[in-house]
Image 1 (spheres, one colour):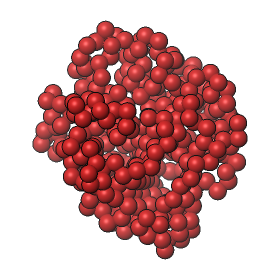
Image 2: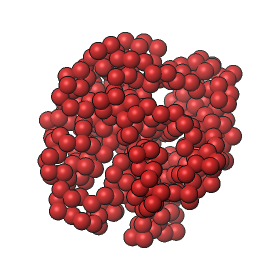
Image 3: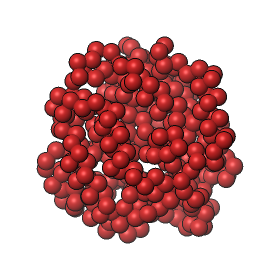
Length: 351
């Protein structure tokens, strides 16, 4: 479990799945999407950890216009971190980014990153209470649950659980699930900027609630994908749970990634029970990567105490100083199956 203090009891799981059973798919705020796509191939884009710093903030409107100019895109996903980790988490900055997001002509799916709330306790970030910043992020960016930013596309939202940022949708028999999973060990690191040396009770409660909801959504996504005979599942989140720079520390002390363990276990369980490819698109570590982090022989298997999941393919988008491109994914027409369903390439920004 996340820690001894975060053990998810049978009662907690019963409550989480009771909510699922008592409400139609988390009291979803959107109608089912996607069957209208028929047999058509389509494309979508993913970006993350952008804009970082003054120079990239100045370029961000141009980045948005580059994505708008890619007319074939069905939607754009921003997998979190709309600022760097050493700048102020101000209301004014959030409002500025929301204004830029509103200029997208494609539907924009956004999941928050740790830099815009988890790490805002840092003195150079303004010494905010991260939970207050998370509330502000939801107020600014998720004021219309069940709808995307930019152009409107209906999505199924976990608004009823207090997480409007967790959304699901489907297009041409590919299931998409966007999850609020954070860096900084999924928000378990102490709020040192506020003088804390251990996670606070309110911090632990937020992590447990959010993680329970994420796990429930993973299970719901795959259950629906199996019923719909979907060809692939695409999961999206900020945290890189397989960050190469963390590998040595995590090998020596698996507790450094303890906040991800239950999420990884849910993904492995569902991937191994799903007879089609599973893709995880994340940001956080800033360097493009494409690999199978839980394939047989991976060191991450011991770290997470996990069986292998060979069908899980991870794609990390470029970010921070490397955010000079976006990843353009192509979903093949309905006749394609297996590894042929999804392909991707990096597309350079114009400036």
